[in-house]
Length: 409
Ligand SMILES: [Zn+2]
Image (tube, rainbow, N blue to C red; front, side, top):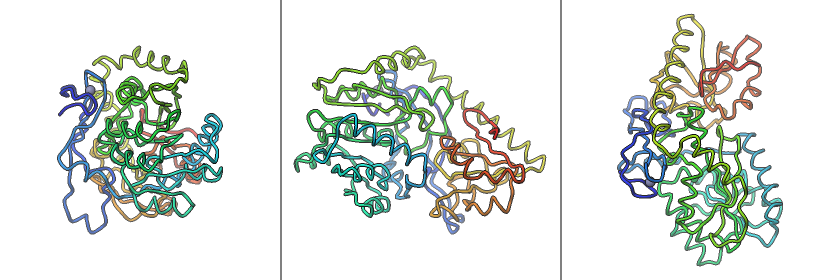
């Protein structure tokens, strides 16, 4: 396989997580009699541009484009994050009724609704029908499309270029990152701004967040590599912020390459830090597999110990993160009998691979587990608050990443 950005032959493995079903391939009860489709989950690093990327498989794009809908609005952490961003960016770019904002992967409108209330014209681009319909219900225009250069050209031909293009947690999920970037260039007005948020590869490595790796997550991005991809597409990164979301993300600010805006000092600062930590040499990538194996071993030891002591462990959050961890560690229902999730659309289904049942919260209240393992550790605070009542029976919360930790309350 060749690098998705620069075309170099990929020869260096970053991590091999074995084989797993697509992380969103939840099973119904009737599916439990059938086999599941497993794909290798292997990640490479390109020694020329340092893009970390999943291995390609035949038909992968269709299979991994699950129509399973995740509604961003179910998380209050995300809603707050979106509201704060909207206030900041409207102020910084002086957006008003004559501006035009495009959000790529607009989900259920959790972010664009903040622009609608300010009477700023906007457009969401979202291929998933359920979430697009939810956004339309609250007054957000949505086009049900996957974003790429051809579609961007179509918008451009209709005179729909944007003052602001927003892409939150979508850039790492596109198979053709070059085509996507060219598309943003095409649909960006002269003087316009792009903001993208994506998990920072530097933090993924630092905090052993291997559970954020799954098939649908094609790229693991450093500022260095994104800067190269932007430059080649005729774009420029003029500012960057570090965010706590998803265990450490970057929010980059892009513009046309000829744009006169000066570059914020943060860009050089983060580029320097990435280089200092060794993100442009092989060693840091070659030791990651061992780092992940240690975390997995510790978790298994903990779960086996609890089982032997007759203690009950349940899990919370039927998310992609949990599936990667469970399937890599080979954890089945004898160690974690059920996982609870707030989304009613997932309840009654089973996790892909591990086949652990997804239940509602009632199960926790009745079962009174000794420990609840939180899979989406990035919103652990929110979950701890929501399930505060487990203290009544001396229940405890824990996370497995970056190491097993019982959360002190
Ligand atoms: Zn490359």
